[in-house]
Image 1: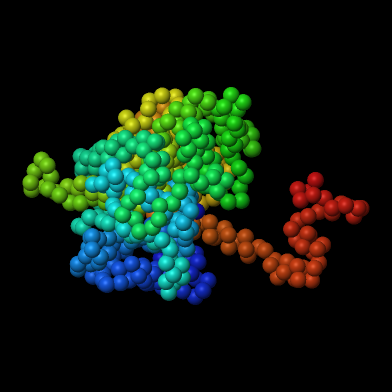
Image 2: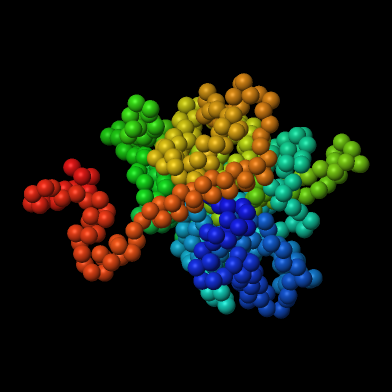
Length: 503
């Protein structure tokens, strides 16, 4: 789906319109829910400031707020905090926010990511906020899913300042992020399993759940000592990504089969001008390669975009009279997963050009900074390619869907092509080396134009429907009338009904 940017379009398609409310009412409701949670967790303190973090999708009942207290709200808890809330404890839309998280055994959808965040903090404490509390509380707004973490004061979201930065500052921030990720990736799989089995931390106010040992059928990670379990997990990541990215109501466009030799075969249906049904493309991963992927798993954030990175203005290292931004923290670990880093890179490539992952300048800085962290071999290159093809197939199955149109126009406007090796990602077309990307405002307008056209087409379709006639047939149990309305043809002898395709 696409999310409109103009208030007029937002108001027209907002779900809250169905019960007579406005978006302002919704924002007020969500802020009240956040304050209710703060009062419940810190009953002896009252925040001096509650500031909304800019949100890209106001239609979802999710918000994040920067909280400040005049004094410590609780012994050992700092004055500056970040709270994220949802009014329904459910994952956010995967088509926008990359992929839905694996759910832990507790009621909070933040739980699984919080445990991985806690472990990541043990390796890079200077970049990962501490989790103070999470759970689901009953507020005046209903069940409220929340997570509270620490935050550095005087910081801003990188998304707010990225376009204004000098190229050198952009490279420095991406390089600092890559350095942090390299330290994080020093955690091996055994350390991760041991942590979830034995570690106890005071940083989180909830019991340690056996999150990483759920069953595949339940949709949670399986990381037993047996390497075959790790292989199952690698395959499960592919299956889950394909499921998350698929447009509801459309056919499956990828199929993963286990081969007798222990490997897998990935069939992806790609567009073909000579065949309206598309043509199959096969990617094969042998058993030994699957085991190598299983051995390379680490903690991946899975949504390393400027919206989830905070920076602070500091004096330049080269000149005291000049200020620049430096990396301070990585937030919103809700989508964190245990996976090969090539999976994180593959997902980033696959969703590049979607509405909230359309900053090519950031993408290129990230890929350049982390290029050495992806093994330069056919195995990881093929894993990245498989994810890109899966997403490509999903889009080709629904070319008229607004998000597919957005991606197509984005590719045209950015003039990018896939590099010879997948690990190098998307690059500028050589004939457009000096091309300048459109502004964020231009992309926002592009999304609104696509949605306006889609809404007009939907209205035209509704206007053509003879809805009163259909309802009359249904209410009077006139099956023949309903079938005639739906275009079902009876043969001339009336002996039997033709099938729904008219054959």
